[in-house]
Length: 412
Length: 225
Ligand SMILES: Nc1ncnc2c1ncn2[C@@H]1O[C@H](COP(=O)(O)OP(=O)(O)OP(=O)(O)O)[C@@H](O)[C@H]1O
Ligand SMILES: [Mg+2]
Image (cartoon, rainbow over all chains, first blue to last red; front, side, top):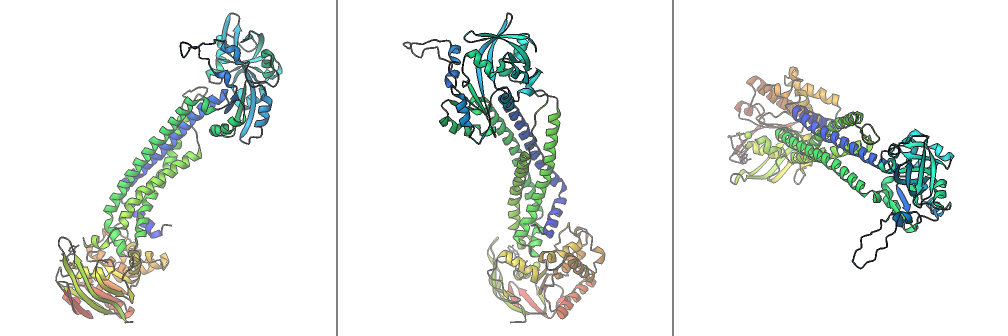
């Protein structure tokens, strides 16, 4: 610990150079404040992006790969014979035939939070002459809500009513607008192999993702199985949520060995998003870090000036019997004081900017203001980096001061 | 041996800049405990240089230096710092105080570093020293706001605070009027007599020197006792 005397000398040095001390503190304040704000801001954007992704797909998805392959109808060589089939026709004839067993096996995995099976069918949605293509999604009504928070996306009507009847459907807002439909209207759905059925709309969903809002109709899984003439054990997709979505890739990896179907983490199916997130993360780290390091150079500079200016006093202290350790302590204390005051005010600044920005009415997707995270770990990280940089910046001049030869200085 | 405050043997010291020359030549002498010694000599003869060697601040020399029975050869800088904090009081040729600190805080510094007494005790001691040097009114003033003579007396008060075995002064009364110089001389004399402290003072003041127990003289780096 710093001795009382050394602390007193350190404070005397700081207060005798108030302006430089204030500049040094402010440079840390801005560095730390900006670090906190940018991290929280980008964290918010990334979390919102993830939310959008997770509104329609889970952390990990299991499906039959044949489904998703778009057949290449352009021959690679002139001699190659291309078998052109209707891709839609084969899409749902594949799928997962033993869904229940696959799900039962997954229950043992401790990382998994929830699992639900879906029967997704390409379909045409019609209202009179107006029609649009999309996906009819047969779901477990309760589980689907648990995993994707469907209830909170319902704009009109209700999600629960879906469970009441095999004739009920919930459709996306975009589709409802396009087909001019509201809650209570009837909608005709035709599957890819021309089976048609009328459903009654019980809810309109608005999730903020076009994949859902413009394309999807939700019905009970049993209704979808009926429509596609499949047995209970069939599903096209098994959706899995895990405890920490950041770990989806690691957790999906061993599952790829155990499950006979394609296992895909959200990162793999949203590579663009992951890249964008990483890029944002990088910028939000590098920019403020550079700022803090620049602040560090500033402190280094100011501390070096202090050492040069106070070199006589250092010589006196050493002549009086203060050791090198005391001198290091004196200057390091100054740096730490600058760092602490800068970090604390920086936390305040970061919090203030974050709060103000989070209140501004800027709409993005389903949110009507910026999503900014308030995570203690960001604040701690910023404080830690700020302190470490100031300590390093203070240590180098302090070591120089400790090496001062008192005789040389006192002799003049 | 027991009653020797200081013993130096064959001290040689060179300066290399701008050209090599020998500033101290085979300097050897002894000082008894409680002795008041005057070191005289022409300007540039090497008095200050010798004093810095004796004070343990300057370690760039050859020869042996024993203070209060402790051989200081081979000690680290930090050990030497701790040693002089406890055993040596130093008054520089030009009074060197911490300008931001008050007079009394300056006086307290070496004792605070030593850390053997409570803050209150040290403050009491420091106040007594200031009173002794007729500085009672200046105690709380920042050092930078004191006159040259006052600063020099604060430096003397500071040199005495840890009751060091040896007090070294480089023209400790150089900046004082004759009345104050007399006062300081009397204080030194008293410390030697009553507390058995040893004093080595560089001086150009013939009166001052004449009243000391013993005079040694530097001439071009050679000591004549
Ligand atoms: N750092 C140094 N480098 C080179 N030569 C030095 C250095 N310091 C002192 N000298 C020289 O050493 C000699 C002795 O200097 P010193 O300061 O000991 O003299 P002094 O006896 O104290 O003189 P004064 O009475 O003027 O204070 C002088 O010739 C001086 O020029
Ligand atoms: Mg001199």
